Amino acid sequence: MEFTAEQSQRYSRHFMLPEIGPSGQEKLARARVFMVGAGGLGSPVGYYLAAAGVGTLGIIDHDVVDLTNLQRQIAHSTPAVGMPKALSAKATFEKLNPDVTVNAVNGQLLPESVEDHIREYDIVVDCSDNFATRFLVNDACVALRKPLVSGAVLKFEGQVTTILPGVGHCYRCLFEDVPPEDLLDSLQRAGILGAVAGVVGTLQAVEVLKYLLGIGELLSGKLLLYDALNARFRAIHVPRNPSCQACGDLDAV
Image (tube, rainbow, N blue to C red; front, side, top):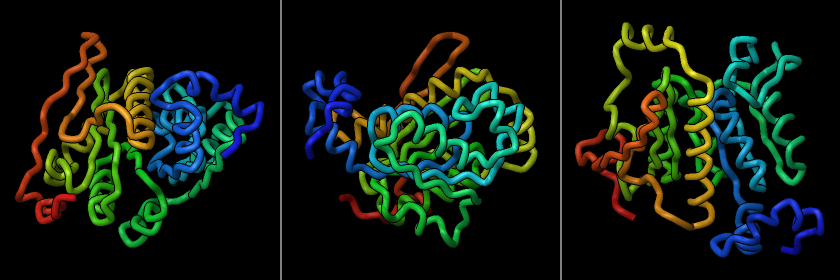
């Protein structure tokens, strides 16, 4: 594809990188990424994917912007309070980069429709804030062999992993099932330092861009842990569980 003078200027810092250049930028322009959630993680993910020139972003979120969200969900602003998050995020990201098409779905991700939502996309980013959705997204991605970048944050900590079905572990290799209700309740009441979501979401965006560009080493088979209070990153090996109910019987690609 031929880039306009404005696009060449916009993506000039990408063009300078031998690992990307005009050919890599063309890959990004043709790429389709589906985001689950437009909150604390979805905000930095969407910002950086849109800024990078990813051609199509899909976003699904059933919630509306609340004043308590603005401490960390930077895709939204005070005037957007009460607005559906998916639509607020769409407006933000398309304003940042008019090259990007944002397909926003104001609704809940459901078992009967999850595969239909993600089928036409190249990669999925799980930016949700609950275990039920994470398992739902994981299982759909495994079934469709869709790459998945999963992130989570709590208090001063976060984690990121990249799932390549048939190659490495999946989310159920890490956590077999949804935790007990009492634990979920306590997690929902826990706070979070807003900037931690920014760090983890940015790491998710980097993983997505590396995958789309075919560069670097992905976090497949690894879980990257971030401890903000102690300024520490730690990567741990995550083996694929041969007895996993989601990916255990999946043939290697």
